[in-house]
Amino acid sequence: MRAAHVLSAARASGVCITVDGDDLILTAASEPPAAVLGLLSQHKAAIVRLLRRSGRDWSAEDWQAFFDERAGIAEFDGGLSRGEAEALALDHCVVEWLIRHPVQSSPDLCFGCCRGDEHAGIVVPFGTEPSGHVWLHSDCWPAWHRSRKAEAAAALSAMGIGSPRPMSKATQ
Image 1 (cartoon, helix red, strand yellow):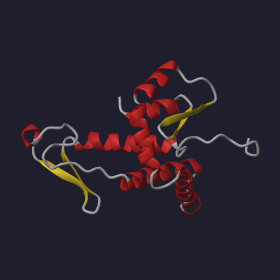
Image 2 (tube, rainbow, N blue to C red; image 1 turned 30 degrees about the vertical axis):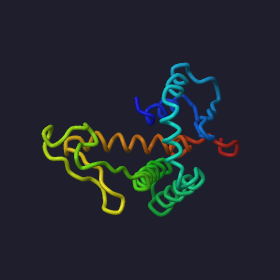
Image 3 (cartoon, helix red, strand yellow; image 1 turned 135 degrees about the horizontal axis):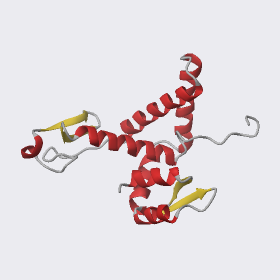
Image 4 (cartoon, rainbow, N blue to C red; image 1 turned 180 degrees about the vertical axis):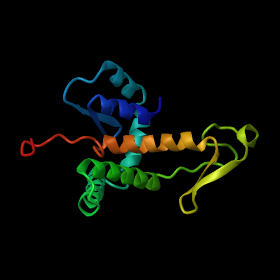
């Protein structure tokens, strides 16, 4: 299981995770399931790296401001419902996260399956020149891209972006 999947499982269990040095700080309304705690412990180093990388350029507050701005534009200028606007804003955040966290790999092997040209055709570059390329078989790209989007969503979710917000007493 990848760190992004563990973060998603933790978030689904109501656990918010932040990093303090090399430690994971868990916040939850109730005791998290033992299975989730076990996964967090097992994948701690990878989760710390993921969360550090996800916040290295923007703080959680910066991401929240970007999300809120995009949602506001979509709702008030675009005429979308709040739910639709927030879904679109999350899509914008995922794309921005992917741009800010590019992946590069060697052209010798497919980054998705770790095999060369002999496996499933030629290994081709995906990405842009300024950020570099990740090299994949065209058949490996869809699964790799889904995985990257899940990684972005998990990193954003860990910062509270795209997660349902508790209603304030004024809006209840």
